[in-house]
Image (cartoon, rainbow, N blue to C red):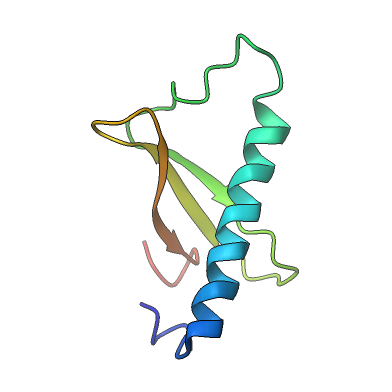
Length: 84
């Protein structure tokens, strides 16, 4: 997938990581403000979080709860219409 998106250098990887991180943290800040909001209580299939990178691609990152740890993981990034 990285090649399909034109990511070829370590700088590209760092940029992509920052974009995924910022979008994920932005989602948590926006939707999980109250103490009773349990950010680990996401649906089993995860949630689709829009990538906020200034482009208009409609790309999303899928956030899911880690199977064994108290953590969220980005399990996939895709652009609707390109990847199902």
